[in-house]
Length: 127
Image (tube, rainbow, N blue to C red):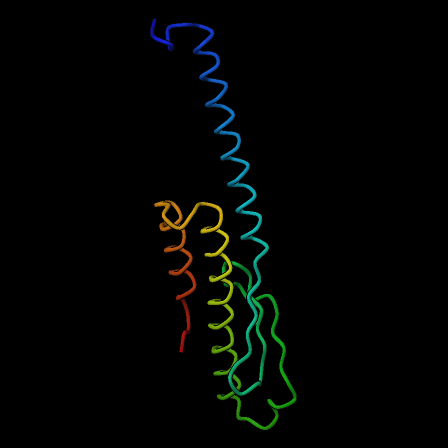
């Protein structure tokens, strides 16, 4: 008899399917939480500023060193942009690692998600 026509076998199949869905949902939530916790920090090459961003590239913190007083405002602005771009790349790298670790390097879903991460990291000023 076809196992899907057998009520007991159908119930076992559906419970197994539900368990897989629930495990996948839990993994997705855990992965999303881990990515949301990502922080990227970087300094510019002249050590004028350090910038911290979240996993989306949003600015969380910016700190200036005393050296900024010796540079024109345009150099300080450039330092902020450079450090921000480097921090976004750092956060993207961490997020890529989480996705690849969770889904595997050969996963089509992982490739699609990491492409989105890379695209988002490339937005804005990159030098």
